[in-house]
Image (cartoon, rainbow, N blue to C red; front, side):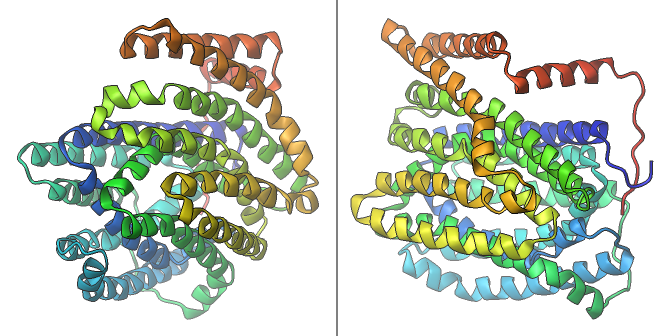
Length: 491
């Protein structure tokens, strides 16, 4: 079968990736719910502030080379080892910078305990660096079962450690140790399961070749990371860690769901599209399938989550977290658009047009920063609403280049997702009315979820939505498949 990536392999890879993200993030979500019931919003807000700097440093440490390794048609040990040593060198420099800057960051936010928290939690940069090549190899070979094993083990063990420390009144340190433990286990497992170890190879020429593609990815990712975390920095400084905690928890609910689905699609679709980079018609078909199918799944989830937000927060997080409800509802709308963003951008990268990708990011961030500046005087809720406005505009911006690259216009894309959006909206309106029955929160949520599923699937069958029929046929094909497709190496 050589380097061919078949439909069966794509589906299998997606399922393993989806299981990895769903399994690990579902447990992580449960862990965070338990921790949120024990700890204070202020403590979560402080961790968010620290994570901002580590996330930005992590983007620089990965420096776009990992994506370049996945996109490049042929790579060898020289490529892998060269990128590994470069990542480790850059990570060391970044850690030293964060270590020195920690007291100044703590002083800026007037939170002295951030100094030690930042210095210790920044050690995760080294752990990510040590497992970066293993992740690239897994993506190239679509061996996401190995990622499932490492992630699942890490989140279970670290969750137990974090909850135990929280009950023992370790406060913010329960969150710090939980994150460190998670990364240690993931890294150790990947080094054991992925049969690759760095060799004594280092080639400047190979790095230069990879950098021609990777630097644009780095610039785009860095721009996106700084912009995304800018809001948290502003909220943490201008308002308070507690408000930042509410903002972050509100965003977490929809982000976990979308992270599972959209993240799985993103991890699988990029190597799949890259393998077809010389066949634009095939790429268009794959992009369209990704947008239509993921929208069909995500729209009802986000609309349904927004409808049940208040009773859900009461039950899971207790009433002390109710200020997070409006943020949760706004971010449901923001994250519902992610499948469109992902499929379009991954197609552009798979075609090797990281230059277009970078230009799009610059345009979107200029628009986003403008919206942010306008919204700040109106408060934190206005900042969240501004994220939705920016997301809608970004949907058109991301789709525009594919009219030329793939002959897949913005109008055609929205025509593809409109049926799912319409029946999801109808479902949401009906489910929302159930709250007027005056039942308890738990009973109301159960009825709303069951009713929503029945209405959505029923409408999809009545109107014979193409994406619904495709999903049913695909599921039948998976269960009826008698021959297992062998896994192939596609270095």
